[in-house]
Amino acid sequence: MKKLLVFSLLLFPALSFAAMENSETSILNFRANQLSVFQGSQNSFSGSISWNPTVAISSSLAILGNFGAGLLVGSGITNFYALEYELLLDLKAGQALHFEAGGGAQTWTTNPSITAAMASVNIVYRFEHPILAIIDGLFIGGSDVFQSTAAYEAKAGGQIRF
Image (cartoon, rainbow, N blue to C red; front, side, top):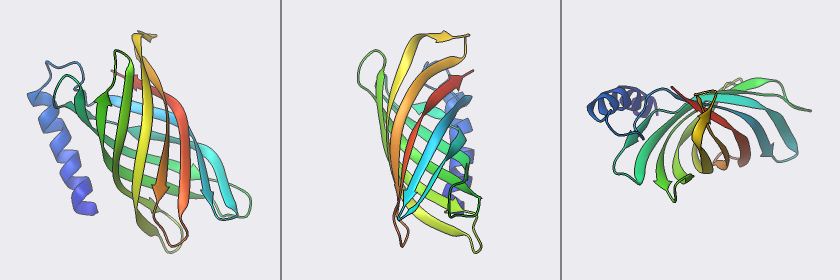
């Protein structure tokens, strides 16, 4: 998983600078969202942030990186961080609607730490004119983290693009 992370961190800036003329290509994309995690009888409700560099493949398809962190807090659990790193395909389904799907991994900083594969899907609505020139859109999504006791995540938030 560390090789995927290092490869992605090197790949996205190189591809982004090579294709800067496309409006869907940008390395300065970020998301902030509410994060709900459901695992057995233990639930967490908090927030997370992520860096989401995007590289356009065509006018309707892009590759999106998702490198994020969130603090998991809830009843019956010790607070810890969830670190996620994944690659998603972004399919433009209209002027403002995008569908994203892909996978990667998530690491929980428990003692001992746990790293597991994950799969995610998101629906994104992009504003025609960004709010305050940077708030680019809203999204909702979900992830399945494949641990010994499966964890399901729900997210809803906004994204900014510089």
